Structures are given as C-alpha cells and as structure tokens.
Image (cartoon, rainbow, N blue to C red; front, side, top):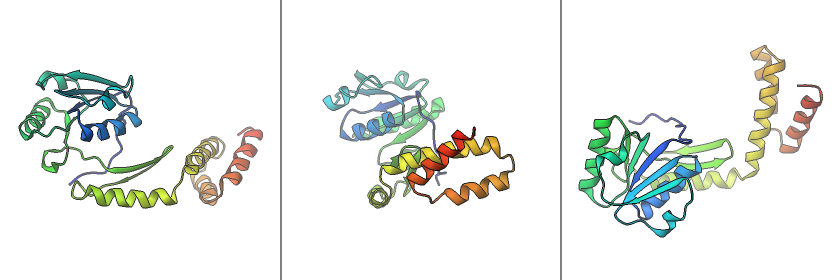
Length: 199
C-alpha cells in the first residue's frame, strides 16, 4: 500500500540506471520538477545526452558506488538481475528505489501527473495499470488548461495578503472561499485592489 505524498526533489541527486526510452520518460519528468539526474548505462540514447545541465551521464556497468548519497534511485534496465541488485543495494543503503514496471521492487511508484504551475494532479493505480492513470490525466487536461497556472498564482498572492491583514482564520477562510470560483479577470482586480490598499 502506497501513501500519496509530494516529494520535493529540487536539486536532489537522483540516479537513473538505464539509458533507453523508458529511462528517458522518467528523466524528463524528474528534470521538470528540478532534480539533478545522474544516468548510468552501458548505452545511452542521444536524446538523453542532449537534455542539458541537469543531467549527468556516465557510460559503464552498474556498481553500488554509483548510487551512494542518492535521494532516489530508478532502475530502468531490461536486465532483471541488475534491477534486483539495484533494489537490494538501495535497501542496504537506505535509499528509496523504483524499479520500473515491477511494483514488488518499488518503495515509490511514479504517478500519472498533470502540472499547471503550482497546481498538480497526480493519479496512481499503485502500479497496476499506468495506462488507466494516463487516461484519467488526459481527461483532466481537457478541463484544466494552462490558464490555471495564472489562476493559481493569483489565488496564492491574494491568500498571502489576506493572511497578513486578517488574523481571524475563520473570516479569512470565508473570504477565500468566496473568491475560489472567480474568473481570472476578477481575481486580477481583487489582487490589484488589495495591493493598492497596502495589503
């Protein structure tokens, strides 16, 4: 049973064992959320090598030393022996591990996710049907377009000001509840008014 959590991986060292298309998918998600990724594989796709300064690639065989001090390790190889060894080494070192497509060898599983600025939807089937999770996310993407990035930013800015000027949490929450469904233009005006009035 997995506990749904949000992990702060910004500038954290995450090691990916494997350099193929599955690894590429995981690496793209990791760098989107600010991780520093170290990739180790006997062969690495050119598209991984071109991902930029957040990804450091090493071509060579896996050893336990490669994962020391990692925050999280992802094993995305097609070699079951290596995958099991990575999982065992992570257990020995007290490091969280994800072996792709093998839930029984995972301390954490990747969810299907949709990111709209600070608004993040995460759907998990606990590794049982990733495709179902992706289908649900696709439906959410139709309803929550990129305009939600600005809306979340505006709501956050308004909340920050209200926390400073209204110390009664009941009254503050009532104000926030009243604006939660307002359109972006209305939220802009509310924020402007609060700012002009000195917050």
